[in-house]
Length: 258
Image (tube, rainbow, N blue to C red; front, side, top):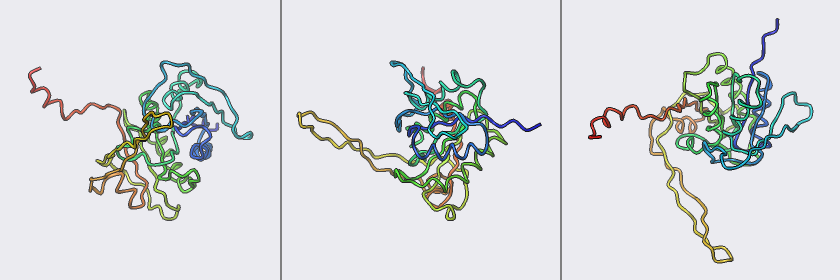
């Protein structure tokens, strides 16, 4: 009897027509049975937002006529896509959820803003092994082909070995030709931040408006971080937990007069 293929949910935050998700779908089709539920428009920086004050629409579409998988275009956020897929569309829980491939880095502090990673985290809260993939290239002409090898490898290893309870993977791939990527490195999240500024302008009607700008600052000199790995030609693999409790602080807080 032929072994049953794993069921894989694919989503992203750049939108269902983004080149990154097309590459991710191509790779996942080689591993299992694929269902795609992704936003109908870009949702970058949405974090873990959900739609609660508006209606949600989810339409079955065909992006490429001869593809065997089913795709749904959703009017909501990346997290909405996962919720709808699991609760309304799929007949059983998927064996794996993959999100991406994102245009641009989701390393270090960027993970908390990322719609790509929030989709993976949402699936993780539902007990689904999940991975967010990102490529360090913001260009619309980004070449995702060097990422294919590592996307396939990490997805297959996740299916084979599973993930610790309460953990999802944040995978970032350097902008390098395939032959120059040195391998994958399990890392911690670098302690870095954005020094943000707002560019204040005035429109023709005299109303002020703002553009968010800023500079990414990495003061973490550790050689075990995602930022170090990416700067040195490695794919970074960071295990991310969605229990946000600062367990190390509980003892100190228990000494307060509460």
